[in-house]
Image (tube, rainbow, N blue to C red):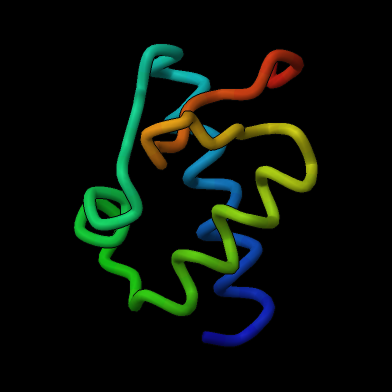
Amino acid sequence: MDQTSIARTAQRIQGEYREMPGLCLTPEQARRLWDLDETACAAILEALVAQQFLRRTTRGSYVRGDNAA
């Protein structure tokens, strides 16, 4: 995946989490939903965690972070 594709996918993920504030996905669910390979999905999700857009629950799922508005 090139940087442009990664950026577009990250924006798409942010958009879907904004549209569905209660969205809670495991890494596997996220990979299937956005048709990503394991490496790309993990990198994008962790980047969104680093930006505090997402946070990882104690069960390993990804949900919107507190300041993801």
